Length: 107
Image 1: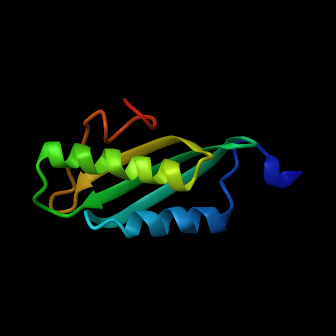
Image 2: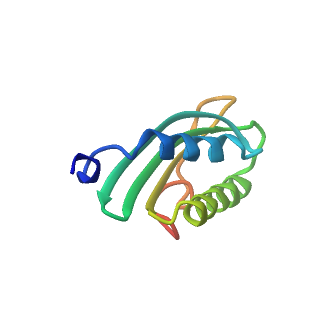
C-alpha cells in the first residue's frame, strides 16, 4: 500500500509529534526545518535544523544534541537515523560537532 512506500515522508501526525518534542526542549529557540523519510516498515530517518538559544558553549551544545537525539529515539523507536543540524540562534552559525550531526548514538 501507498503508506508503506520507502522514501516517502513519515505521516504528518508523526512529524507533528516529532516537531512538538523538539519545540518542548528548553535549549531550542526554533525548529527551522524538519524532514522525515521512511526507510523501511519500521525505520524512519529524521533530519531537523534547529536554532539553539544564544550563549551555549560547544560542550553544552554537544550535550544538548545528544540528549535530544536520545529523547527522539526513546519516544519514536522507528526513528533509527537521527540527524540534527544545530545552529546558534543569535548568529545562525552551524555547529558541526559529532553529536550535532550523524546517526543516533554517534557521529
